[in-house]
Length: 217
Image 1 (tube, rainbow, N blue to C red):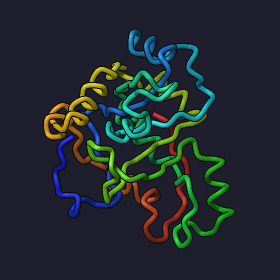
Image 2 (cartoon, rainbow, N blue to C red; image 1 turned 180 degrees about the vertical axis):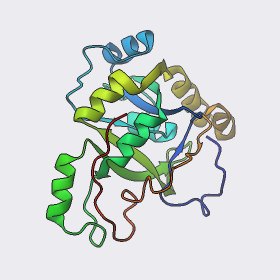
Image 3 (tube, rainbow, N blue to C red; image 1 turned 135 degrees about the vertical axis):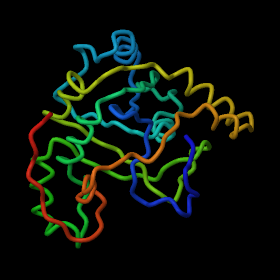
């Protein structure tokens, strides 16, 4: 991942991701029984629970932090999942913040009602450097449930790749004292070209009006 600005200049809430004009890449980690068939077939197998919430992360290093470089139990297979930007943006437009913010949400009851109804939710966690230390700006975590989860698995997914060897190689370089060499191997995550207003209801800054769900693509 190459930073386009210094950590000081980087906005607190911004999506940075590997993306094309049609797709965006997100990361997940699974046990081999799920991850390996998904990578082999290029789609999630029937054993993948489509009725459960699943979290996707555009940040490779945040996924490394979460999965312990793909070495935590149940997270031994790290996947790079390429999905359509159309689906990604639909999920964001219909998402709500995963936590209540005074002064941003009208009241706690309204936020709880929105959380129950939304097919997606967002939380912003500190981005990570190659040593997995927290940086002063945030990384998007997008939770999908219900309709969003099903569409993610069966409609939005374009490709699934096993990037576990990359995770292990980057970790080896960091451990050996070569973080700059490790950086050269990282996915090129750049600011995502947000359509106007895409994240206004998710940055948690200032008052806003609740949005009605938009039709799925």
